[in-house]
Image (cartoon, rainbow, N blue to C red; front, side, top):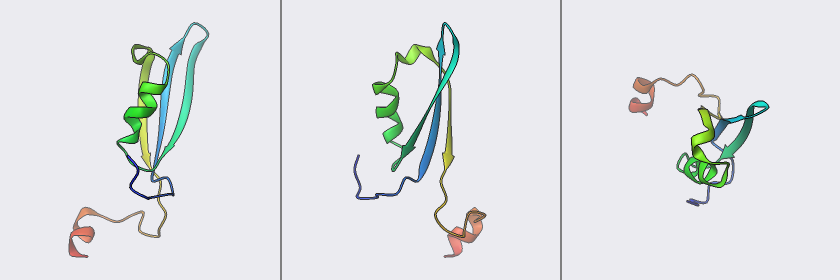
Length: 72
């Protein structure tokens, strides 16, 4: 999905099982739902060992709490 957001907000790392061992592929995503497309474009999804998703912070509020966000 393209929402017009051009700077990636998410970093996903997908580990795939291969005969030579694990291979990891990093994806920079604008929208979390783009992870689905990254998995579908990759090797067979039954080869996925794990997926980790990290938030990419673009502001000074990287320690923002849920309560602080609700007050804004």
